[in-house]
Every structure is written in structure tokens, then in C-alpha cells.
Length: 273
Image 1 (tube, rainbow, N blue to C red):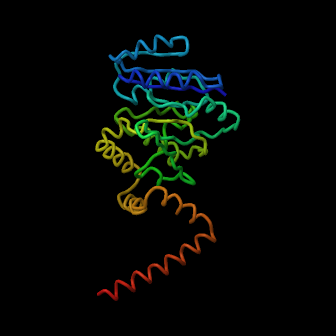
Image 2 (image 1 turned 90 degrees about the vertical axis):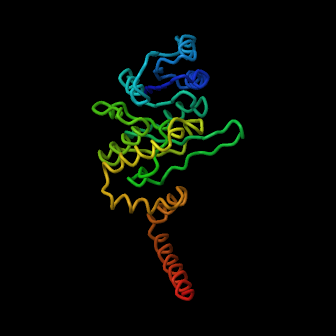
Image 3 (image 1 turned 90 degrees about the horizontal axis):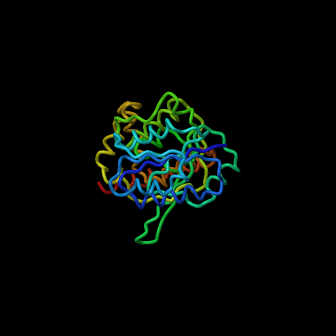
């Protein structure tokens, strides 16, 4: 099983160095490493030259954005699975690829967890994954892109949409999982140790606009409103609710509890007025 690890970078020299180190020290060696730099002016090209023997393909030239850079990497990839480990993010430990290989996953898309770690506080937390993937996953949220492995064939006829600056990966997930029904495997392994703040956080307003645009291409407004009602719950509670609803006995108890709570709340409201 061969993996293609793709790193895109722009003016993040130290982050790039950290990412490269995490990739080249993986214990599993059947992978190729591709780095696409957008013509950085901070010395990133010098870092790439230092690691020239460790990188199978790299280029430093102006590009049209993050997804244009990723698409450049995809075109150069030959592995069975592609992973996008962008500069500043790292594999969680040196055994990530080996552990993945030993488990023998074969789904079209394999999704692990991110570990968000903040250096200043020395604190972190791991991504919460849903019990299953549906359109609900993508109405306001998405999956951890750095911790996802995609079969290369998925990109054969559809690369990332470069008209989107921040959420082309969300659009790709929706197309492949919800529309084309590609197989997906959620795993408990932590794949990536990532920086808590990235481009999508810095441009949060635009990210939200693009996200809504992508969802609106798939769902009618009435369906979006239904999903948004569920999203009034925090993500952890919503995912727990989904697990409960998928179990017959638990669903009956939940329905009973909701009826009681509704009667109590309604009764209090009537009493108040």
C-alpha cells in the first residue's frame, strides 16, 4: 500500500520544517512525499533544498491559492491513498502510517481524528467524529481534512474546486460521500497534530459564506432550516443524539423522556400565563 503525502505551503518556513520532519520520520516507508510551495519569500525554498533527498517532488512557484496548490500535488501523486498534511501540521507520531497500513482499511475515504494542541497553554483536545456520516455532518461542520486519506481514483475526474478559497474540501466531501455514495471508514486513530488557528479561522466570515453556498447547491432552503435546528445543539450532544436514535430501545426511552419534559414545560408555561 503506497501513500502520497502532499504538503502545501506559503511563507510558513518553520511550520514547513516541522511538517517535513514529521513525514520523513514515519516508520512505514512505502510513501511518496510531495511539497507544493506558492513561491514563498521567507526562506521556505531553502528548507526544501535542505530536504531535497527526502522529498520525491517539490516546486516553489506562484499559485492561485490553497486548492490550486493541492491540485498541483494531486496531479503529481502516484499512491493508492492521498493525504494532505499542510505546513504547520504534523503526523501525531512516527507510527501513524504503519498503524494505518496494519489495519488494512480499503474504503474510498478513511477519516481519523485531529489533535488540536496549543503551545502557549500546553493543552489540547481530539476531534469528535460522528457515529456515521450524512449531510448533517456538513451543513455547518466538516471532517478533519488533514486526518483523511482519499483513494487517488476519487480525483480522476474531479479535482478541488479552485473557485472556492476556503471550503473546496467540504464541497469534495459532500460530492463524494453524500452524492456519489463513496465508501467511508471512520477510525479512532489520531492522525494529525494540528495548529488550532489556520487560514479558515483567519477568514471566518468568508469561510461561512462559502460553506453556506456549497450546502445550498445540494439542499433546498427548507431542508437547510431543518438541519440548522439540529445544529442548535453543540456538536458533541448532536452526535450523541444520533447514536441514541439509531438504537431501538434507547430511542423509545428518549421519546418517553421528551414527552414528559414537554408536558412539564408546557404545564409551567400555562401556569405562568
